Length: 339
Image 1 (tube, helix red, strand yellow):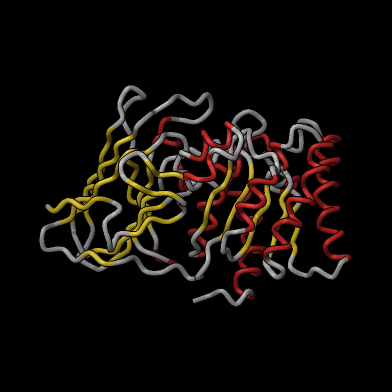
Image 2: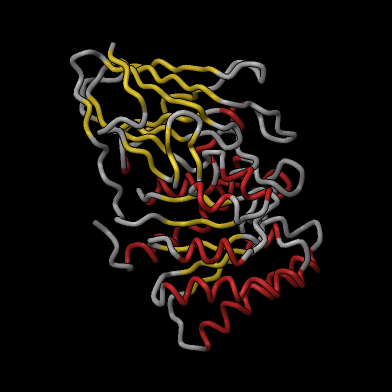
């Protein structure tokens, strides 16, 4: 078996803005970490949304992960906090093959060995949500081919900005977050800029995101705005900063899914976000879209869609993704960004 570092060509890293071995699997570049809040800076050094991808005909593959920390999360299982998901194939033929996760919170190393046929196929590793990643190494048979992954169907990534829900809390494993589900269903790259408790519509993040090249921007920070007043003061200015840099970029506004606990407050917040959408449409902006989060969990068994009435579990994330998918599929297929 031959050992490859995950940053060695032709292996590709997706979804991360700063990737340098060891320790640096970050979602924001180093130069911006000192300009954002402490909460954003801390969460930006977790690799959630990051993926390692390559193509090989090796019939036996072993993937080794090493974490630089492995902290307990009050509501996310070890698999969801520190695990990495592995999939084989692409487009409609993608299939799940296993999870790489330490056996306990006291351990930082893990590995997964699996076998497949000798077809030249894509391998995708979804990186952990919470644990900071130190290294990933990939073992293939000595004579196996190793090639760049099949390109995603769309040239530019989707960009998500939002709360711990955007970040993937509390999926049982990283690839079950709504962002990851949408990426697989659409065969689209994405960047996850969810920052648990810290995504508050700050101008520095608006300016940073405005500088990214993307196929669509999904604005989902309702839950982290500390008050409705804060949301009202930041939501439309944040959008306008993006729109100024990208006049034709599709922008999708989402409202928070945990509508039931405080329906009056949730409705007020929804009205604020819808007003941003309505104002843009009134000004002739036909590249904005709106989804009401109250409908994410459906009407039956809503109480089964969350961990504690707020953060979605796998069922909640599946229902979110199923609601968002047709809107994003329409946006992406008509946006002229397909390969």
